[in-house]
Length: 131
Image (cartoon, rainbow, N blue to C red; front, side, top):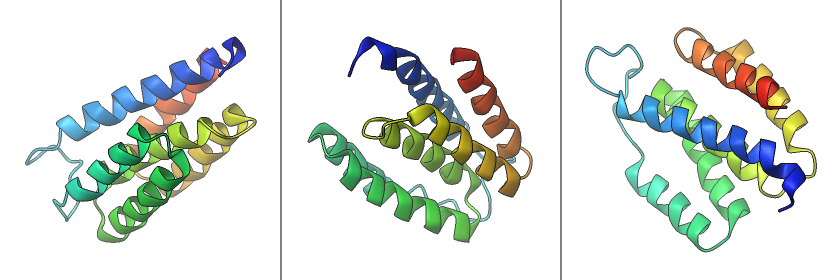
């Protein structure tokens, strides 16, 4: 990792902080729960283990699985959290992480609705600001 990648790391850190905040706000009546209260605890532990072992692509595979299941079940909190992790994991091994981040967030914004749409727009704005 070189100094020129520092802005990307700031974006990734900000995305993870936002995802953590969203996750912590998961409570009854918050409007972000969706129909399924499943938190994918086992899967997230597996992601953390892969990250600790320095295996971002293996962690990304698990995050993609979480994303698909959360999207299918309407668990909006987990969808946003998975997007944040997906972007941060891809940034660790992709050549042009900023452009991929922007494209990913734009695609997700197009498919999302309030309140996750507003959160994703905020993430995109922060990415542009840091860039």
